[in-house]
Image 1 (tube, protein in one colour):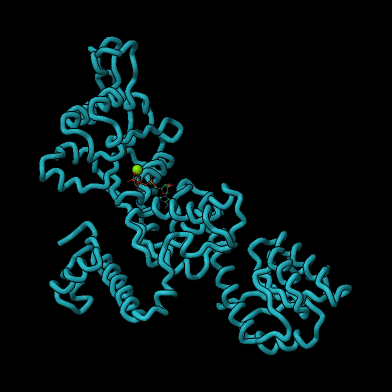
Image 2 (spheres, protein in one colour):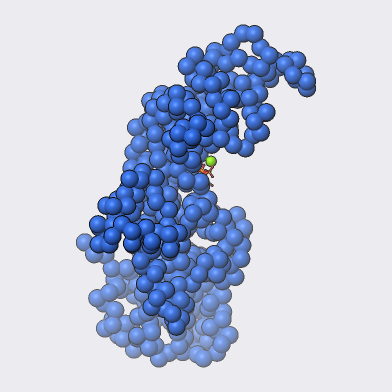
Length: 457
Ligand SMILES: Nc1ncnc2c1ncn2[C@@H]1O[C@H](COP(=O)(O)OP(=O)(O)OP(=O)(O)O)[C@@H](O)[C@H]1O
Ligand SMILES: [Mg+2]
């Protein structure tokens, strides 16, 4: 089923109406209204994404007061609607007033159909993006996976895994590059478990100095060391009945690993300076962005601890592997920050979307979130552009004298990355798929600074 976007024509100029009908019947679902009351009634009922509004309406055919009033009311009813205003008056003040009142664009009579066609296409594109983003946000808010957005196959697989593993009580090791959302995954697992009413206690093993980490985790008795003026429970104990999230587990000092292992086996802790064991019932989730197998090989991580923690391993995909989720997340963050900073931004320009899709995202979702936040602060117009995001505007590169080379390199880099992802990081397989030799593929990887995804040959 193909659905044509609805386009509402508002005006009483018969010439324009006939022109539009003739030109746009096939591409759009045309609706008509000749005055303010009729226009607003159609907008309330049909919520058309596009409105073509003749500003010169009765009773102010020469001026634009009636048209501008309709415009303002329309935008108030539906802030995502794209209103293209048409004026027969070359007064610049009217054009400016229209744009200030929320018109998407303004065209002068006589309307050039080819120009209008392009304007409508762009408006449809933007409106689709904005509406889709809103729908997805509404739908995502309703589940236990709240906060975790993603429509891509890798993310849907991840959600499936979280749903399956959540209600069980097994330890889970969450792996993934920095900023991919490992903590969100841990929280979702907790919310899906029978422990959801009990505490979720997170501790970042990498952020706490080695000397403090032990007392943070296990607690201490009064007088255990200088400064221990009263008894204090550790984080493990304070998660009693709930979930303990050991973040950056790869950074836990070797000396503490034995102690942690003992706790995982016996389900009891000894506070520093304490004589008696305290029994603790917690589920342990751990996260790491380093390869623990590597750490085991180089004697930085105990193998027995590893097997205790990774009864189930959940890999969180890198942002680059999530395809169009990049724009979904970007739009969600834009809405969030625009609200927070009280800026009336409507979305991204098509150039910004292209730039977002082409960027490398080594910092994953966290980098995307930060970039969009800065862009929202910096943006001056209604739409965020590549320079607000501090990303290269690829449409300019295309016009550059070196355009062909740059464009080819961008494609090549993208293709190599996608094929390598699909081959699960297996270089030989990817080389066959690309029709090149392994050495050539290695050359491309180093030229473009592409890292091989985890499970390598
Ligand atoms: N799928 C997602 N949907 C929405 N927001 C996300 C998603 N994934 C991550 N985020 C956001 O990105 C930021 C980073 O997420 P989080 O802290 O969970 O990552 P991490 O993998 O623990 O990173 P690090 O390894 O650096 O600790 C957070 O602000 C989080 O809310
Ligand atoms: Mg984290």
